[in-house]
Image (cartoon, rainbow, N blue to C red; front, side, top):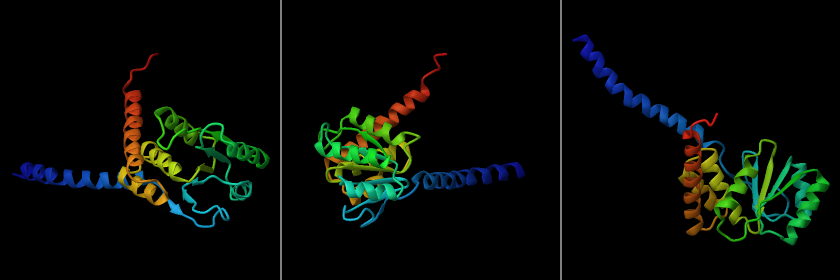
Length: 198
């Protein structure tokens, strides 16, 4: 009789314990939240910060000088290739001793290759505190949402809600976030499942 009671107790406890473990793991996976900081970079407008990544629209030299004083070490541009504004930003970054990374996204919705370049730039171990920008901030919010969900494990619905508040447009950009996260997570799973070549 005692072994049967023990078995029943165990069967009741397993789902409860599993649920608690999943909840804790989910909480840990969320990581830092996106915070909105007005006037953080002077008159640049809306600036959002998540961990050590700052998200905003295209900065002027005075904003970059202030960003450097705030501890920014890398500046990632999502502006289209050959953007004259980027040349000015690149020169100002060099003057302030900051790394400048040009991702070069052509349209409002990034391609797989453009997303991969942005993920690589955000995943660099040596980037330090980073400022990422595009023309208006909308594309920056979209790309960062992809990175948050695919690389940090933050829940997709939380990420999308934060991205909308950060400036991501509704509709197609949200679909792109979901599609790209699925693609990147699929790649990671395939890489882990691949047998060693050695």
